[in-house]
Image (tube, helix red, strand yellow):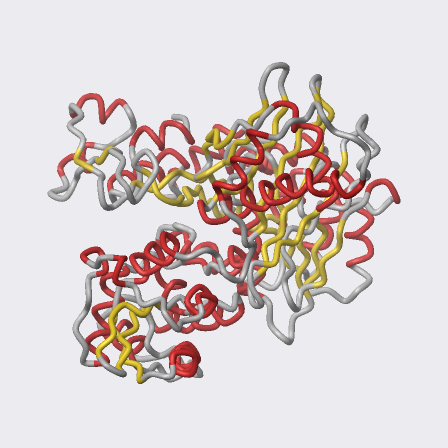
Length: 570
């Protein structure tokens, strides 16, 4: 396989992965660039974002360096070398000293090309270093189990639980020093919850007061899970601490507020939380949305598009003008899809402006505007201003009204690429929704290039999923085709659950309906056809709807039939 013209010259295990067709040269080039943008090591980036097997990568690295591959699952963590080693170096560089022979220290690493890490351990230990190749997830798990996040908050879980449970809230006075001592456990407890949420890969945190209880829930892989039930007496203090961290007015408890928390995990990594408070019957509920900048650097291959769908997406991005619309419910990954497209288009010779409510992730090189309706800065007002700023590409967070839709359509018709979102259930319904807003059919048919509807489904854990025995008649009723059932590799899997996952699922994958506006579909729009007619024309053109795309993920063993039933409907 030949590298792309102008691409970096691949070396080491990167070259092996390309040559042995684990990844294309184009995708490797993008992965290197995106990992660098996200300030992330290339090995976890390839595993987490491009879903390349950690074992395959470790084997290629071991082959490249002529070293054996060591299985950390067989290693006794009691043997970890701690004496004379700064734990901050272990958590910062993600390497682990596991054996010592005389003056030789054996260090487990998933990427021995990280020279800075090796030099840091060598200087700190004053010993000679020998790298041992291991799988990255196993290394991460061992470090998480045995070391605190040295670059982050320092506190004991046991101390926090003890303080929260044994605090006597009835004997408080107004002494400032005593109040500060009382608040220390609250500060530590909130910090612990935030760190735990990041480690678990949560997308949202809910702090909820009720009449007789208080609970904290995380949304992990799209599903809410109860994590903690702190004493109800602490409800006000927990809310106040979160409001202070997010720079809200703690004296205002009658109206909703918005804020933001920036949590610095290390010198090179920070996570933002978008915070909203809501006055409820029994106190203020606060919801925190985790905004991880690395999610904007995923690359299109990590999102789950089928090859034909990816090709349609890339073709739409290559067009100099027209409109690309992404639709789906809240939490379906629309923002990540938009940011992925913007990252592909973000070049020195391109002027990109976005209007968002609010700006979730900062993109270097993109002019981002926070919509603020209170001062008159609406989507339509921002869009009007963009058109006087010599734009090439415009992204509008959401088309909510006729005025915004008309300006966006005008921009798409006058030589600009416009990207936006709507809240509809399918791609065909998006086109009829624009017409119902009052946009003339002719303008819709001539300006919209591509519509993407999407959902997020949980991935089956590859370690514990098992084949599911479902009668053929039931499979056909659920939407599978006769040809699907006749395929020699056809197999449906179901979740089980193991130590590596939660309820048999680990991570999420996108399910997409990618519909190009063909001449046939344009004709139906011009004739004021309904969503059913557009859907029939889309299927005739070979574009899979959401249900069909979900069933394809089931046939690939990526997700389960139960999960597809949950996020899509026939």
